[in-house]
Image (tube, rainbow, N blue to C red):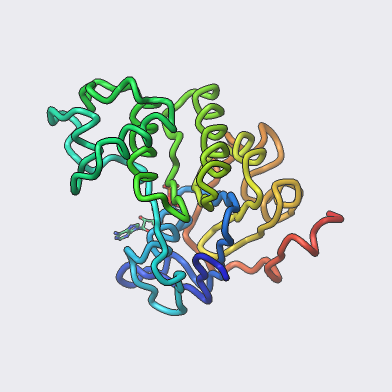
Length: 251
Ligand SMILES: Nc1ncnc2c1ncn2[C@@H]1O[C@H](COP(=O)(O)OP(=O)(O)OP(=O)(O)O)[C@@H](O)[C@H]1O
């Protein structure tokens, strides 16, 4: 059984439909990366999977009792607020002390427990957010651009750690990322989103898919092209049909 399955999922904000007809399912233990231009609905898809935004059409089904860990794109508490890492781990409610220590240790930041949150580097803060997300032994981790602001070695470390966590906890991981070259190697499956699913499959399949190349170009592993892509929010364009991994191996 899928952990989460969206079928024909559409989401609108007011009159504006940002996702239309998305079919997307996550199986236990897989690492799926969602790529797409700015404004293509990646964060919205994650939030719809969690149940934080309601579909305007279609359905999202979650396995009953599913434990979800979520790392947001930005920290929503006031970052100038005095607060230690340990205290932050106890929000919104205090858990067993050793659980927090274990989680911090798992992501390599046990030594930061007494430090102030606001004094952490970007990479340290990401790890603390991740530690908090794994406190409830999630079956699925949802990460929204977890390496934003990290340099390339920092990002590569972070993705290695995600793979390690998947191995230790056996959880599935769904993450949004712009760092296509790193992400590609760390993912079992890549979904290219532009209001709808343009193409999906293994990293190798997606990299050679014409729909992906049309969005991201072929140079610089797509990373720079991503930011240059001029997204006009017209989701009505037609790629003919959606593809999945199996019919694209020969491209
Ligand atoms: N709460 C909201 N109310 C109204 N519009 C919203 C809301 N959240 C997102 N949008 C709009 O929906 C569209 C998709 O946003 P979303 O954040 O899902 O895209 P994204 O692919 O994650 O973008 P980015 O790569 O820039 O983070 C954008 O045009 C955005 O402005």
